[in-house]
Image (cartoon, rainbow, N blue to C red; front, side, top):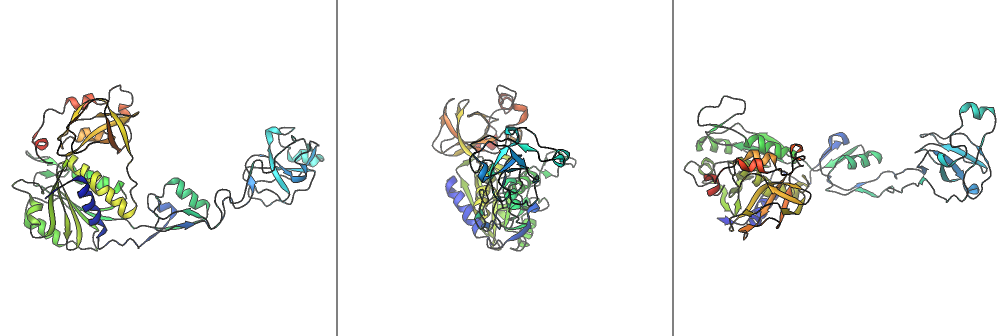
Length: 439
């Protein structure tokens, strides 16, 4: 079956929503220190107002309402440190007050210390010697340098909405409100499989004709970065019987999604395709380059996705299909920023496919990194965006506008170069077999 990118995105989103083992209504109840990067399951109401009391915005003098307009010397009252409960402020007095300290009853404003005469606080010894006075400027407005109760958020107000991703600022707000724990959406669980007789574990000796397994590390990192709990299965060879045995052991209790890489294309040894020939898994050709071969369905009721085996194809598949579906399902991760950029150079694309190239975005311009090949991991590692050349586009010229999806920061080693992409393209060579066929 041939699909457009949009059709397969919808199919993957629908598949994840059918996950039998994942319950959106369930919750993980976590202390704040463990909730970073999680999504709130429900609205959180502020149990107290912020600020919880009128307090000083500055180090200065708290001034009684009756003395706002006058310029007569005021007797210096007892100082008010932060954390104390002050006595009411008498007319004709001014109380030294520290930033964040509670405003005394009767005070209507705070005058910063630098506007006082003298522009300093009296020492305890000076206050003990007599009744020191201070002159403050006249015409002070009520409320000057005062943080009013609830001016940030009122008690009972919604501090954060359900679905909010909890970052440092959000957790800081909850802590300021006195919230100690939150109910968050459970993590999605993925069982990750990699296949192929030709792949070896990184760190092992590499025999002739074999390559190191990049997909497990690549996708495990991408999934964890997206807030997913990942279980990595041991590397599986190209024996369909062994793979069928592994699939048979999968239950909804062990995973919300099974994700495999490799073995789903048109070759003679497509082990995943062979192992799942009698299953409810559909093998499709998506109008996408790289990432054309795709598989989706269920295994024993558990959602299953099959990505192509080339590493860049697997990563593009994740970014185009699985990552957006995870956000729609769990609220995590946050959507990738998508924006327009000006092409630094011309580019060709197969008009019948949505081609995704890798690029470096900076200052509104994007330069391509590497060629379209699905094996160019070095180019992927140097990129900070995906460049979209949609179906129907055969070529674009330098200066044309394209849509890009940001996937990372500008690499530091490229910041100082005038042209950050030429070196990576130089070694990409001509079109290989992976580029000539769907990947």
